Length: 325
Image (cartoon, rainbow, N blue to C red; front, side):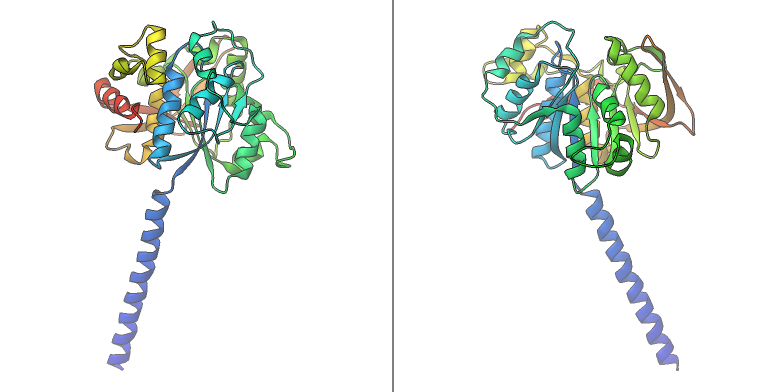
């Protein structure tokens, strides 16, 4: 009887060990899953959105993210976006075309990038967002570095040829996380929420109606704004399109890199502790003029990104990642 009892105990221990190993391996596998990503940019007169595209390409090559689509939230730059993608081997990534006009001056680099013959599919941005979410077998994260017009459009969209679900239902079912570049902490007027009339309207709607079950992370200007990135490329302007754009913009020694910081944190979220990145729960309110107020509170609806290392630390990491192999 003692032997049988001992044998039963041993088998139970062995079984529990096997079960623990199985779950441990599942956790490790889940942690190593490549993040499915849609990049949503404004790419107006500045070059920080080009940095965001460059970093996304780099992290895709490193299997940190899988770039599924790039959508523009202002019209007119889709040929330039496609040219950038094609030049770096991403001609299979579709480009979403915005219905909203671009109220900034037409930058010279758009023509330069558009010279590249691109085969990227171009369709309406909202349709591309919906189709990409529906077709992905895994939950998708959306990283937006400009106006929230496309996110607003997705939220109010209705069922179509891709899915009978409306926008909010589709977000609830298929969006893993939302990462938003925008806002001044604790309050102020931010370009992405106020520069043009539709900016404040769309931002207000997104924050007031966002599906709370889907995490939304806010990257305020104080995070990436002080990071002057790209200066390490200044001797590469003849061969590197990003270096060329920085030079044409007159910022070859470096430019504020708010958008780049958002992509960097998203792609390296597994190493957030190493990089001194934490979050604080908060609420966000935006008035009709685009003035935002961020209030930290334990039961807040959103997450505010916080950095704890100095600006040079993040600048140097981002600079290193701006160089493609």
